[in-house]
Image (tube, rainbow, N blue to C red; front, side, top):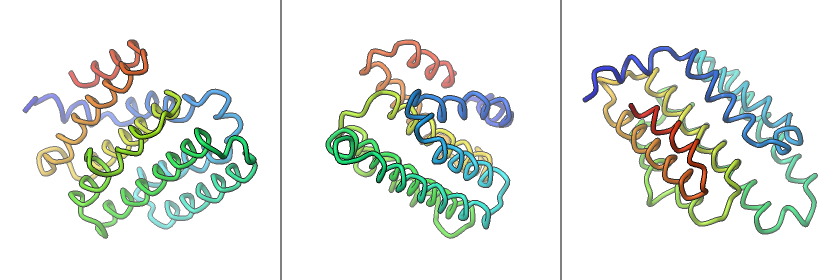
Amino acid sequence: KDPTFSNQISPFSAFDKDLFRKAFKAGGKDFIAMEGYHDSLRSSFCALLEDDTSSFYSHLLQTRKNLVEDFKKSGGGEAQSRGFANFALKFLTLNEMEDVGAAIAGKLEVSTYIEKWCTDTNALLMKKKFRHPFHELETAMACREIFLKILLRKFGVSSSDEIEHTYIHHLQEACCIARQHSMPNTARVTLDRLR
């Protein structure tokens, strides 16, 4: 095991500036159109980081409401085919976030979260089955990286090797997805985080 790995996890403030920016601004025009959704999603992340369970569930509920409103406004055309799949990906991210909150609160085993969300036989198939624009995939992957970092921060590396291995596997998968979408710079930056 790399002894410097835990040191890379510790400076969370340096990490979250870069990853939060990527998670919430990768959407370009979509970010502006869904500002209420992104604002409440950011608030949900902040509540998770502060172990503020009641605020977390309140912000998560607001995020879902905002996403439903955005879905309604999108109209019939965009809501079909690719547009529908992109909204489904966002709803999956919110469901995953709810499970992260449950794991932090001790209501869900971390291994159950990993089995449900971080294995190729489960929710990851959603990303592979549909042809999402890269910025949608990048946002979902950045959110999952934040989730895993939060779990590592909460439970530590030495006591949670399963989380560490899942985190490394996630970065490898994110790199592969970036390469498949001809995004070599994103792939390189992802690989840099593995070092």
